[in-house]
Amino acid sequence: MINDFNHIQAAHCENGVTTSLLKHHGIDIINEPLAFGIGSGLFYIHIPFMVVNGGPALSFRTMPGAIFQRTAKALDIKVKRKKFRSEEAANDYLKQMLDQGIPVGCQVGVFHLPYFPKEYRFHFNAHNLIVYGYENGEYLVSDPVMEGTNRLTEEELTKVRFAQGALAPKGHIYYPENIKEVDPETLKKAVRTGIKRNVRDMLKIPGSIAGVSGIKYTAGKVRKWREKLGVRRAGLYLGQIVRMQEEIGTGGGGFRFIYGAFLEQAADILGKDELLKVSEDITAAGDMWRNTAVQMAGVYKGRITEQKDFDETADMMIAIYEKEKETFKKLSKIKLN
Amino acid sequence: MKEKDIPQDESALKDVTREVVYAKGEDGKYVSSLSQGWNVKKEALDNAWDDVNEKIEEAKQAVINGEKSPIYYFKEKTLMDMPTITGYTGFWSFTVKRHFKPSVFKKLSDKKLAIYAKAFDISIEELKSPDLS
Image: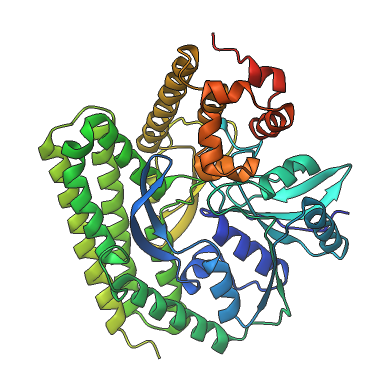
């Protein structure tokens, strides 16, 4: 059973699955930045006392699953989701969907994903891909971070769908239902809602670890890491920040730039030129993140390892905190209606 | 970032895929373009792997010195943390920790060893006498 499916590559897996599945059902208006913005994907959080792969637990985007959920809801599309106890039931259900001509999104772990380069295979369980058919015992897979499509044997697919550990997918499968055309008013409303929610997420979550304040929180940690952990471990921690910010598999992909691209489109959709200026600001913030990554690389490459280098890194993050705070404040003041 | 500044450094993604990057095109509008890698993140990834390999080497030594059982070594070798290994085996974490002891490991039934062997994707023989050369 092979269904017609148009593979679309994306910077980030969940944006990609959202975009491809909606486009498949005829919603042509959607694209990656729009899905990301309507789903209020931009975020920052640093979870203290939690360790991921021996390093700090932080994220540059909203929680897994939220982008798809919110974008579909905003466009008035229902999402059907299912998780399974048994691998057999999970497989049967998947086949059933494909036989009905329905491509589905699957949450998977990347550790056993054979087409990923070995270097990228950690136990990260919130990766997303689309299965759109099967043939000769192999499933046809559209993984949004890959340039082309791939094939997985039933055994391989089952293994990644039932990966274990944090965020275990448990065969999680999802697809949009009751698709109807998106009229311009619905789209405008979705864009407005997405922006407002993102402003709230970045500026108004109480506490010091989430939203723009989270960036300040991490900066404070960075200042102390050298003394607390030693140069080697502190370097690894900085490396983890860069990987969270940039890498495929962990869900990176220059989120600030994707958001900049979203605001550019939002300006057009809502007829609000003021949004273009904010798009410039968020682009500048993205560039600042990249410069900070270069500075951090200096530390983990062992080129600059003094306390003053850590302080400088922290200062750069404080500057990003201020830039993003100011940017989202500006965004909050724009009348979107 | 400008489209022309998108890094194209050689990375682990070589011959596998290129990544989509959003950047500013010539006319100042956003475009999406492909990158084959960036040294800054390649180094971060290499560094993380050095750390993993160090831990595997330490675990290997601990098994050779009779301080830990092969389960501990294979847990490190397959990059598992506690939630991952308890997820794959169904054992409680304190049970797994007990199984790290060579004395306890020696008395494990083949049934339990088979559960670990499956989780690590190896044979029971390999689990019992791992190649630590």
